[in-house]
Image 1 (cartoon, rainbow, N blue to C red):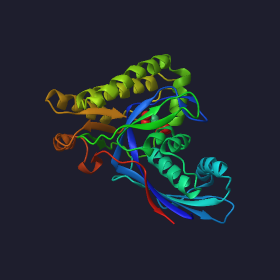
Image 2: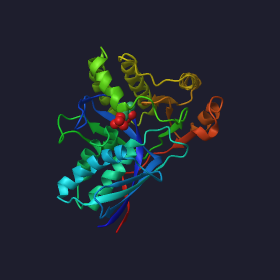
Image 3: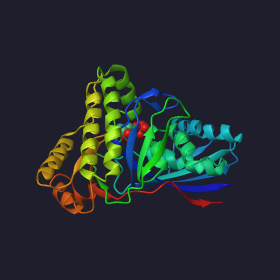
Length: 324
Ligand code: PMV
Protein backbone atom coordinates (compact mmCIF):
# COMPACT_ATOMS: atom_id res chain seq x y z
CA UNK A 1 0.00 0.00 0.00
CA UNK A 2 1.40 3.42 -0.98
CA UNK A 3 -1.47 5.82 -0.74
CA UNK A 4 -4.77 5.85 1.17
CA UNK A 5 -7.68 8.29 1.32
CA UNK A 6 -10.12 8.22 4.24
CA UNK A 7 -13.17 10.19 5.36
CA UNK A 8 -14.26 10.65 9.00
CA UNK A 9 -17.18 12.68 10.33
CA UNK A 10 -17.09 15.08 13.27
CA UNK A 11 -19.09 14.32 16.39
CA UNK A 12 -20.74 16.41 19.09
CA UNK A 13 -21.04 15.02 22.61
CA UNK A 14 -24.47 14.76 24.23
CA UNK A 15 -22.90 13.63 27.50
CA UNK A 16 -19.63 15.53 27.67
CA UNK A 17 -16.08 14.43 28.33
CA UNK A 18 -14.05 16.95 30.34
CA UNK A 19 -10.87 15.94 32.15
CA UNK A 20 -8.21 13.27 31.84
CA UNK A 21 -6.85 10.96 34.49
CA UNK A 22 -3.96 10.10 32.19
CA UNK A 23 -2.87 13.02 30.03
CA UNK A 24 -0.45 11.03 27.87
CA UNK A 25 -2.67 8.08 27.02
CA UNK A 26 -5.78 10.29 27.16
CA UNK A 27 -7.85 8.26 29.61
CA UNK A 28 -10.86 10.34 30.71
CA UNK A 29 -12.32 10.56 34.20
CA UNK A 30 -15.81 9.99 32.80
CA UNK A 31 -17.45 8.28 29.86
CA UNK A 32 -19.26 10.27 27.14
CA UNK A 33 -21.87 9.81 24.41
CA UNK A 34 -21.91 11.63 21.09
CA UNK A 35 -23.78 12.05 17.83
CA UNK A 36 -21.80 11.76 14.59
CA UNK A 37 -22.61 14.48 12.05
CA UNK A 38 -22.84 13.99 8.29
CA UNK A 39 -22.27 17.60 7.18
CA UNK A 40 -18.95 18.08 9.00
CA UNK A 41 -16.08 15.83 7.99
CA UNK A 42 -12.40 15.54 7.21
CA UNK A 43 -10.88 13.83 4.20
CA UNK A 44 -7.28 12.80 4.69
CA UNK A 45 -4.89 11.39 2.12
CA UNK A 46 -1.66 9.80 3.29
CA UNK A 47 1.17 8.57 1.07
CA UNK A 48 4.56 7.04 1.73
CA UNK A 49 7.56 9.24 0.89
CA UNK A 50 11.30 8.68 0.80
CA UNK A 51 12.29 11.62 3.03
CA UNK A 52 13.58 11.82 6.60
CA UNK A 53 10.60 13.86 7.87
CA UNK A 54 6.85 13.65 7.58
CA UNK A 55 5.09 16.43 5.69
CA UNK A 56 1.72 17.69 6.87
CA UNK A 57 -0.61 19.83 4.75
CA UNK A 58 -3.78 21.08 6.45
CA UNK A 59 -6.43 22.74 4.30
CA UNK A 60 -3.83 23.25 1.58
CA UNK A 61 -1.01 24.76 3.59
CA UNK A 62 2.19 23.08 4.71
CA UNK A 63 2.26 23.10 8.53
CA UNK A 64 5.22 24.34 10.58
CA UNK A 65 7.65 22.19 12.55
CA UNK A 66 5.63 22.33 15.78
CA UNK A 67 2.38 21.11 14.20
CA UNK A 68 4.20 18.50 12.12
CA UNK A 69 6.02 17.20 15.22
CA UNK A 70 2.71 16.67 17.00
CA UNK A 71 1.36 14.69 14.04
CA UNK A 72 4.66 12.77 13.65
CA UNK A 73 4.46 11.66 17.29
CA UNK A 74 0.99 10.31 16.57
CA UNK A 75 2.17 8.55 13.39
CA UNK A 76 5.04 7.02 15.39
CA UNK A 77 2.46 5.01 17.36
CA UNK A 78 1.45 3.30 14.10
CA UNK A 79 5.06 2.95 12.91
CA UNK A 80 6.05 1.26 16.16
CA UNK A 81 3.16 -1.20 15.86
CA UNK A 82 4.11 -2.13 12.30
CA UNK A 83 7.92 -1.98 12.69
CA UNK A 84 8.00 0.26 9.67
CA UNK A 85 9.75 3.60 9.89
CA UNK A 86 8.67 4.99 6.53
CA UNK A 87 7.76 8.69 6.51
CA UNK A 88 4.55 10.02 5.01
CA UNK A 89 2.99 13.05 3.36
CA UNK A 90 -0.44 13.97 4.68
CA UNK A 91 -3.05 16.10 2.95
CA UNK A 92 -5.91 16.76 5.32
CA UNK A 93 -8.91 18.90 4.49
CA UNK A 94 -11.81 19.84 6.71
CA UNK A 95 -15.15 20.03 4.92
CA UNK A 96 -17.08 22.25 7.25
CA UNK A 97 -19.64 24.37 5.35
CA UNK A 98 -18.76 27.72 6.89
CA UNK A 99 -15.35 28.82 8.18
CA UNK A 100 -15.21 26.09 10.84
CA UNK A 101 -15.73 27.35 14.37
CA UNK A 102 -16.36 23.72 15.21
CA UNK A 103 -13.75 21.36 16.52
CA UNK A 104 -12.05 19.50 13.70
CA UNK A 105 -9.62 17.51 15.83
CA UNK A 106 -12.12 14.66 16.27
CA UNK A 107 -12.68 14.02 12.56
CA UNK A 108 -9.05 14.95 11.80
CA UNK A 109 -7.38 12.41 14.09
CA UNK A 110 -10.01 9.75 13.31
CA UNK A 111 -9.40 10.10 9.55
CA UNK A 112 -5.63 10.04 10.05
CA UNK A 113 -5.84 6.95 12.28
CA UNK A 114 -7.97 5.18 9.66
CA UNK A 115 -5.53 6.08 6.88
CA UNK A 116 -2.45 4.99 8.85
CA UNK A 117 -4.10 1.70 9.77
CA UNK A 118 -4.43 0.90 6.05
CA UNK A 119 -1.10 2.37 4.96
CA UNK A 120 0.95 0.42 7.52
CA UNK A 121 -1.31 -2.61 6.98
CA UNK A 122 -2.10 -3.02 10.67
CA UNK A 123 -5.61 -4.43 10.16
CA UNK A 124 -6.80 -2.99 13.48
CA UNK A 125 -10.45 -3.53 14.39
CA UNK A 126 -12.62 -0.42 14.74
CA UNK A 127 -12.44 -0.82 18.51
CA UNK A 128 -8.63 -0.83 18.44
CA UNK A 129 -8.64 2.00 15.92
CA UNK A 130 -10.74 4.09 18.33
CA UNK A 131 -8.06 3.51 21.01
CA UNK A 132 -5.40 4.77 18.61
CA UNK A 133 -7.46 7.82 17.55
CA UNK A 134 -8.05 8.58 21.25
CA UNK A 135 -4.31 9.19 21.68
CA UNK A 136 -4.47 12.02 19.12
CA UNK A 137 -7.51 13.71 20.64
CA UNK A 138 -9.98 12.15 23.09
CA UNK A 139 -13.08 13.01 21.10
CA UNK A 140 -11.51 11.42 17.98
CA UNK A 141 -12.08 7.98 19.51
CA UNK A 142 -15.82 8.54 18.92
CA UNK A 143 -15.44 9.69 15.28
CA UNK A 144 -14.48 6.19 14.13
CA UNK A 145 -18.18 5.35 14.33
CA UNK A 146 -21.38 6.76 12.93
CA UNK A 147 -24.69 7.17 14.75
CA UNK A 148 -24.71 7.45 18.54
CA UNK A 149 -21.42 6.49 20.12
CA UNK A 150 -20.24 5.86 23.66
CA UNK A 151 -16.66 6.36 24.73
CA UNK A 152 -16.21 3.99 27.65
CA UNK A 153 -13.85 5.78 30.06
CA UNK A 154 -11.95 2.66 31.14
CA UNK A 155 -8.89 2.56 33.36
CA UNK A 156 -6.01 2.07 30.96
CA UNK A 157 -5.04 2.01 27.29
CA UNK A 158 -6.87 -1.22 26.58
CA UNK A 159 -10.13 -0.52 28.39
CA UNK A 160 -10.73 3.05 27.13
CA UNK A 161 -12.43 2.90 23.71
CA UNK A 162 -15.51 3.99 21.80
CA UNK A 163 -18.36 1.85 20.48
CA UNK A 164 -21.55 2.45 18.56
CA UNK A 165 -24.63 2.21 20.77
CA UNK A 166 -27.29 3.04 18.17
CA UNK A 167 -27.39 3.62 14.40
CA UNK A 168 -29.68 6.60 15.01
CA UNK A 169 -31.51 5.73 11.83
CA UNK A 170 -34.49 7.59 13.26
CA UNK A 171 -35.20 11.30 12.99
CA UNK A 172 -32.53 13.18 14.95
CA UNK A 173 -30.28 15.99 13.79
CA UNK A 174 -28.29 18.96 14.95
CA UNK A 175 -28.18 22.61 13.97
CA UNK A 176 -24.75 24.19 14.34
CA UNK A 177 -24.93 27.92 15.06
CA UNK A 178 -21.56 29.47 14.27
CA UNK A 179 -21.09 32.62 16.35
CA UNK A 180 -17.35 32.89 16.13
CA UNK A 181 -15.14 31.07 13.68
CA UNK A 182 -11.77 32.11 15.10
CA UNK A 183 -9.41 29.67 16.77
CA UNK A 184 -10.31 29.38 20.44
CA UNK A 185 -8.16 31.20 22.99
CA UNK A 186 -8.05 28.37 25.52
CA UNK A 187 -7.46 24.89 24.11
CA UNK A 188 -9.57 22.06 25.48
CA UNK A 189 -6.34 20.29 26.45
CA UNK A 190 -5.24 23.16 28.71
CA UNK A 191 -8.78 24.04 29.88
CA UNK A 192 -9.60 20.54 31.07
CA UNK A 193 -6.24 20.05 32.73
CA UNK A 194 -6.74 23.26 34.77
CA UNK A 195 -10.31 22.24 35.62
CA UNK A 196 -9.19 18.88 37.03
CA UNK A 197 -6.53 20.63 39.11
CA UNK A 198 -8.48 23.62 40.46
CA UNK A 199 -12.28 23.26 40.16
CA UNK A 200 -13.53 22.60 43.72
CA UNK A 201 -16.43 20.47 42.53
CA UNK A 202 -14.72 18.53 39.73
CA UNK A 203 -15.39 15.27 41.61
CA UNK A 204 -19.13 16.03 41.59
CA UNK A 205 -19.04 16.51 37.82
CA UNK A 206 -17.48 13.07 37.35
CA UNK A 207 -19.97 11.50 39.75
CA UNK A 208 -23.04 13.12 38.20
CA UNK A 209 -21.99 12.03 34.71
CA UNK A 210 -22.58 8.40 35.70
CA UNK A 211 -26.33 9.06 36.01
CA UNK A 212 -26.33 11.08 32.79
CA UNK A 213 -24.82 8.14 30.92
CA UNK A 214 -27.39 5.69 32.27
CA UNK A 215 -30.34 7.99 31.58
CA UNK A 216 -29.02 8.93 28.14
CA UNK A 217 -28.77 5.27 27.15
CA UNK A 218 -32.38 4.72 28.29
CA UNK A 219 -33.58 7.76 26.38
CA UNK A 220 -31.79 6.53 23.24
CA UNK A 221 -33.32 3.06 23.61
CA UNK A 222 -36.77 4.66 23.89
CA UNK A 223 -36.07 7.12 21.03
CA UNK A 224 -37.14 9.86 23.42
CA UNK A 225 -35.70 12.96 21.76
CA UNK A 226 -36.94 15.37 24.42
CA UNK A 227 -35.24 13.34 27.15
CA UNK A 228 -32.05 13.11 25.07
CA UNK A 229 -32.13 16.89 24.69
CA UNK A 230 -32.78 17.53 28.39
CA UNK A 231 -29.84 15.40 29.50
CA UNK A 232 -27.56 16.89 26.82
CA UNK A 233 -28.38 20.45 27.86
CA UNK A 234 -27.78 19.70 31.50
CA UNK A 235 -24.48 17.91 30.75
CA UNK A 236 -23.20 20.88 28.71
CA UNK A 237 -24.18 23.40 31.40
CA UNK A 238 -22.59 21.34 34.17
CA UNK A 239 -19.38 21.06 32.13
CA UNK A 240 -19.32 24.84 31.58
CA UNK A 241 -19.96 25.37 35.31
CA UNK A 242 -16.78 23.40 36.09
CA UNK A 243 -14.90 25.52 33.55
CA UNK A 244 -16.14 28.75 35.13
CA UNK A 245 -15.13 27.56 38.60
CA UNK A 246 -11.59 26.87 37.36
CA UNK A 247 -8.65 29.08 38.31
CA UNK A 248 -8.10 31.10 36.21
CA UNK A 249 -11.67 30.78 34.89
CA UNK A 250 -12.28 29.26 31.47
CA UNK A 251 -15.22 31.08 29.91
CA UNK A 252 -16.28 30.24 26.37
CA UNK A 253 -19.61 32.09 26.44
CA UNK A 254 -20.04 35.23 24.35
CA UNK A 255 -23.01 37.63 24.30
CA UNK A 256 -24.63 35.91 21.34
CA UNK A 257 -24.22 32.51 23.00
CA UNK A 258 -26.62 33.66 25.71
CA UNK A 259 -29.04 35.12 23.14
CA UNK A 260 -29.19 31.78 21.28
CA UNK A 261 -29.62 29.80 24.51
CA UNK A 262 -32.50 32.06 25.57
CA UNK A 263 -34.13 31.73 22.17
CA UNK A 264 -33.90 27.93 22.42
CA UNK A 265 -35.69 28.04 25.81
CA UNK A 266 -38.34 30.34 24.39
CA UNK A 267 -38.94 28.13 21.36
CA UNK A 268 -39.34 25.17 23.67
CA UNK A 269 -42.03 27.04 25.64
CA UNK A 270 -43.84 27.32 22.32
CA UNK A 271 -43.68 23.54 21.83
CA UNK A 272 -40.76 23.46 19.39
CA UNK A 273 -38.37 20.56 19.96
CA UNK A 274 -35.03 22.28 20.55
CA UNK A 275 -32.26 21.68 23.11
CA UNK A 276 -28.79 23.17 23.05
CA UNK A 277 -25.30 21.92 23.70
CA UNK A 278 -21.93 23.70 23.63
CA UNK A 279 -18.29 22.63 23.62
CA UNK A 280 -15.00 24.41 24.23
CA UNK A 281 -16.09 27.48 22.29
CA UNK A 282 -18.94 30.00 21.96
CA UNK A 283 -20.84 28.17 19.21
CA UNK A 284 -24.15 26.55 20.02
CA UNK A 285 -25.46 23.27 18.62
CA UNK A 286 -29.18 22.56 18.74
CA UNK A 287 -30.57 19.05 19.01
CA UNK A 288 -33.77 18.68 17.03
CA UNK A 289 -35.21 16.75 14.06
CA UNK A 290 -36.29 17.30 10.45
CA UNK A 291 -39.80 18.34 11.50
CA UNK A 292 -38.63 21.38 13.50
CA UNK A 293 -35.37 22.34 11.77
CA UNK A 294 -36.81 24.91 9.34
CA UNK A 295 -38.75 26.84 11.95
CA UNK A 296 -35.72 26.85 14.28
CA UNK A 297 -33.42 28.09 11.52
CA UNK A 298 -35.90 30.82 10.64
CA UNK A 299 -36.06 32.00 14.25
CA UNK A 300 -32.27 31.88 14.63
CA UNK A 301 -31.86 34.33 11.77
CA UNK A 302 -33.10 37.00 14.23
CA UNK A 303 -29.63 36.63 15.80
CA UNK A 304 -27.26 35.04 13.26
CA UNK A 305 -26.97 35.24 9.49
CA UNK A 306 -28.35 32.24 7.63
CA UNK A 307 -24.99 31.09 6.24
CA UNK A 308 -23.78 30.55 9.81
CA UNK A 309 -26.59 28.12 10.62
CA UNK A 310 -26.12 24.55 9.38
CA UNK A 311 -28.39 21.56 9.88
CA UNK A 312 -26.81 18.14 9.87
CA UNK A 313 -28.28 14.68 9.85
CA UNK A 314 -26.52 11.70 11.36
CA UNK A 315 -23.17 10.67 9.87
CA UNK A 316 -21.73 7.22 9.17
CA UNK A 317 -18.67 5.25 10.27
CA UNK A 318 -15.20 6.15 9.07
CA UNK A 319 -14.91 5.31 5.38
CA UNK A 320 -11.96 4.29 3.20
CA UNK A 321 -12.36 6.16 -0.08
CA UNK A 322 -9.28 4.93 -1.95
CA UNK A 323 -6.39 2.53 -1.46
CA UNK A 324 -3.52 2.20 -3.92
O1 PMV B 1 -10.57 15.63 22.92
P1 PMV B 1 -10.85 17.06 22.71
O2 PMV B 1 -9.69 17.90 22.96
O3 PMV B 1 -11.49 17.27 21.35
O4 PMV B 1 -11.93 17.50 23.83
C1 PMV B 1 -13.27 17.62 23.59
C2 PMV B 1 -14.01 18.19 24.73
C3 PMV B 1 -15.43 18.62 24.45
O5 PMV B 1 -15.64 18.85 23.08
C4 PMV B 1 -15.67 19.93 25.18
C5 PMV B 1 -16.44 17.60 24.98
C6 PMV B 1 -16.58 16.33 24.19
O6 PMV B 1 -16.92 15.32 24.82
O7 PMV B 1 -16.38 16.32 22.96
